[in-house]
Amino acid sequence: MKKIIILAAVLLVVSCKKESQEPFGKTETPTEAASPTTATPVTLGKEIFEGKGACVACHKVDAKLIGPSIQDMAKTYKAQNGNLIAFLKEEAKPIMDPAQYEVMKANLAITKAMSEEELKGLEAYIYSNLK
Ligand code: HEC
Picture: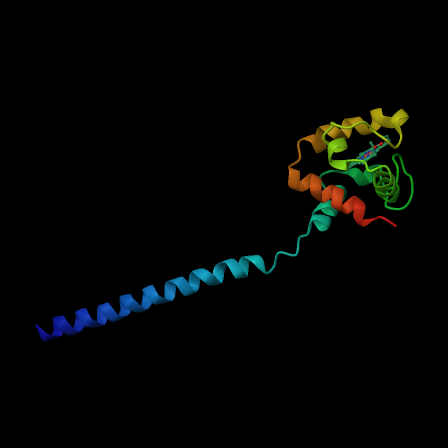
């Protein structure tokens, strides 16, 4: 009988310990998950511009290629108070080179399917090249 009581006491202590440690372990997880997140809208935008957006095929940072340079985009959109996100959603007309719009228009199918976060990233990346 004594043995059973001791065993029960030990079990109680062990289970209490586990419970008190759990919240500690739980609070640790979010901080761990948050710390390696270095992705900013700009880095996300750069990643898309050079990656799945394939925008670099026609747009260079500092020189005109097939389309205007990223620096020119930033300059023009800032000067004319344009809305890059609306353009990429095909909700706003081109303000840079309407004569070449057809070439760009094909890419709007890609950008229209992007999330708001991705579009904000592209916008942030384009403006990060403002000279
Ligand atoms: C096949 C070549 C090509 C690709 C790929 C391309 N563009 Fe363009 N882009 C153009 C051309 C040509 C223009 C000039 C016509 C115009 O102004 O709409 C342009 C213009 C633009 C403009 C200025 C629009 C305006 O107001 O006139 C923005 C912003 C832009 N592109 C963003 C992007 C982004 C973001 C991507 C990647 C998702 C991309 N482009 C991919 C060819 C391309």
